[in-house]
Length: 268
Image (cartoon, rainbow, N blue to C red; front, top):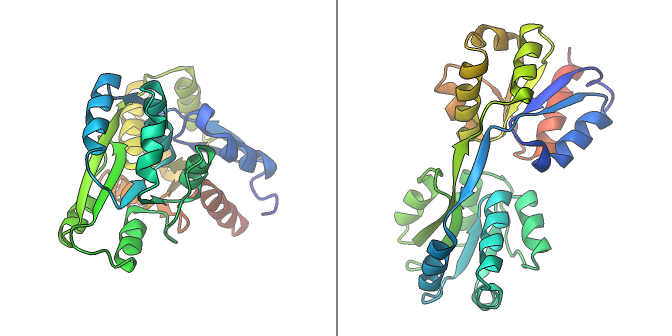
């Protein structure tokens, strides 16, 4: 990348604490990053986790599939809280672990988990394509620790292949409360000082609109002059449902998305 992001304000629907790579990449190119916290993740009750995980351990899974870095963080946090680390290690020794993308893979490896597979396309459809490529036998059992707000596309598709999928809902997203960050962001939009907004998930889209309607009800006409970017197809669908047509990043990673922003502005 060159210096095409100089003095460009790039916002992303992520909290600052989870945004180190994005901030570094944008600043490296002279841009101004804004982290917009759209949601807070509420883990399930620790006792509920213990009960469900005990049931999980009575079954034999062939694959553990992780669909996001957050699912890894919260899953291992709950495992450690309940002193289940050794039991989980025994489970993982009997199966293969699949990560949806490099960020999720990195989180798993930091927890000393060997990742066997990763799709080329870091999306739900990419995961489905990989699982089909593995030619799983009917009766193969897969565990997916994930958000309770996730869509059922992957499970429904695998059900048609007679694959047994257990979705373990370990957290639920809730809309973040409006804050000074959002008030300042809305003021910058009013002054046409925001150049790009990157949406990272369907939930982030929904919560972004909810918060903006609260802090700046008339924001919609202002974002027509802003480059709106989606990090994946499900996020694109959610934006389209709100009559917004984003540019979708082909590589569903923060780095790939920032590179897309760079290419867009290099053509202007």
